[in-house]
Length: 145
Image (tube, rainbow, N blue to C red; front, side, top):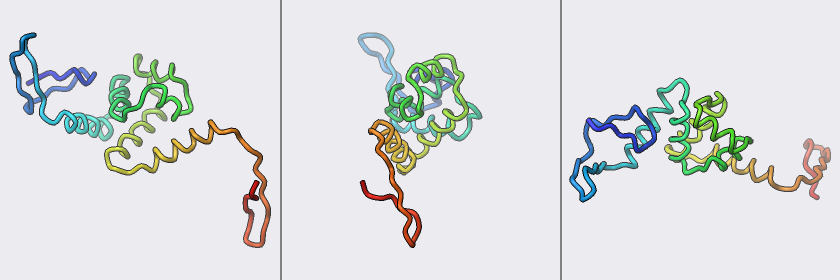
């Protein structure tokens, strides 16, 4: 059994799928299909953990290729909060659930949540313009600016 800690989690052990090798710098380990291993870890975390620890939250964020700042922006929060959640492990339930949904969507090949959130972030950054609505026979409609 190999204790795989490089992923940032302390409780991951590999029963097989790795080779131990001697290198000029000491013992080395080569893991077959590292991407697949990380996907399996992520799927297990999303489906089986009642609450993510800070390290597990960080693992999923990194697997999504998001910086703390990028995730904070998506959550409508600040980077410092994400950093604290990851270091102290006090991840709010809403952030835990959002990250799980985002991860699951990413590995299943759908991009609806991510696209919606990205659009909301984009809209938040845009200058807000005056919205004018006009009532027509078919109902209310936005009037072109």
